[in-house]
Length: 129
Image (cartoon, rainbow, N blue to C red; front, side, top):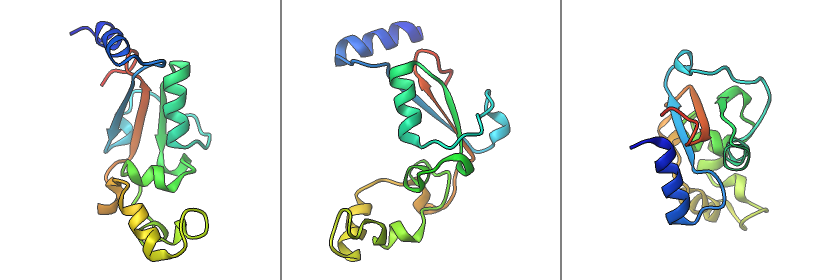
């Protein structure tokens, strides 16, 4: 099926107000078809830019400022501060044991270590996946 038709149907049937987003993970950054801008961003910003601005972005772990986002995609090993629950203490919960359960509810590829070297995120209509 043509990508444009697929995207149009997704928008119509799911009643989306923004562009559907595609995410492609690369084990080798040399295979990424675009160069990353050397600016710090987080995964949520990449997705918002794809949804609202029809933009394609590339992210490498060293330029992603959100450790939990980078670990969710397997760009880094999940830091101990998240696996222990300490990162949630004060802001989201009272103690580390509750914080640990809080973060266990988030699927993180990085729990099994770094798996990928780069991520390509963009409007599904424009992204070649």
